[in-house]
Length: 173
Image (cartoon, rainbow, N blue to C red; front, side, top):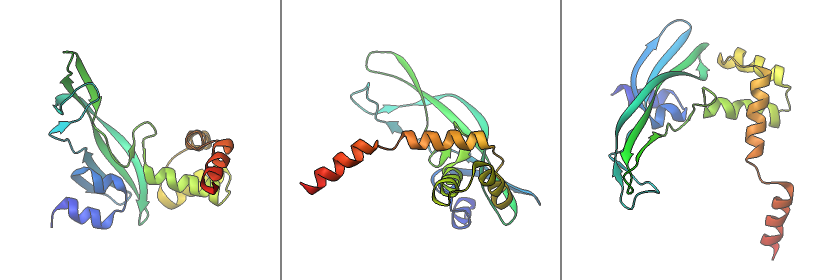
């Protein structure tokens, strides 16, 4: 059994299931998993009529927190990749290869954000209690102010109350 398939059965986070696992290291305190995005042979881009082939432009390694397991912290060493192509107008363009399950802007996995929002919104826990519980249960280090930013960011993506009412009225008619 390959490392990737055995990890996919152990870890439920999308980060492991949808990216390439290149290495794993386990200590008494931390499970460290190295990930790379899956790079497609070609990408459809809005500034090109045909899918384009890309080449690596640059990359860097970032550390991302995942939900800990069995009393150990899970840390992902994620290789972020920028790839380049020349568009139909002859312009050199770069973009980041998507990393499913990873919030590169927050340095956590999607599941960490989901768990935090569950505690804050569904369970109505305070930000400080949520930060403490994330640390105690999953070895995720965060602050109340970071949790507030996550909550605000997610809330901004939701439709307004007026839009919700409008949608409900549309369904009635």
